[in-house]
Amino acid sequence: METVRRRAFMKGAAAGALAFTVGGTEVLMLPREARAQKVPLKVLSAEEAGRLEAVSEALVPGARDAGVAHFVDQQCSVPPHEALLGIRIANVRPPFVNFYRAALNEIDRQCQASHGKPFAQLTAAEQHAFIGTMRVGKHPDWKGPPAQQAIYGAFRTDGVDVVYGTVEGSEKLGVPYMAHILPPTRW
Image (cartoon, rainbow, N blue to C red; front, top):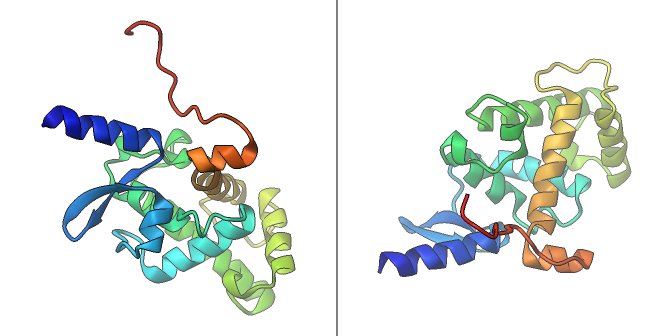
């Protein structure tokens, strides 16, 4: 029986599925499915998830529906050494949710100061202008960490991962999905 569960897990993981808790049971599903089924978040508040979705959607169209907030939330809830977040590779110290909270707070602080409203309420043109300035680290009154460019890179990477890191996402790009390439012999 254990072999069957492991096989199902490996098949799901290869397709981009993650373990989400639904009704007290861990279920493999894509972040987009977790979002559609309104799976409860573990570490992000609903308000934080909405803010994360707004920034991610402006960076990578489709990130909201692909479940970027559920992806980040799930990854922030696993042991740090298991997280698939780009910030882990960039040596951000756990708990990783602190990076996202600080980033979202600073983004909205900047938008409040310059536009009188949070990022999610900016027009698309204002959002893109804000992100363009953040990408090159030119918001003059930025209070980090995290640094502007680090936030841009992390949020963009998360968005790309959920939108294009699946079989369907690869098909949209017209490239074969090859998340894992098995070596010809054991290591």
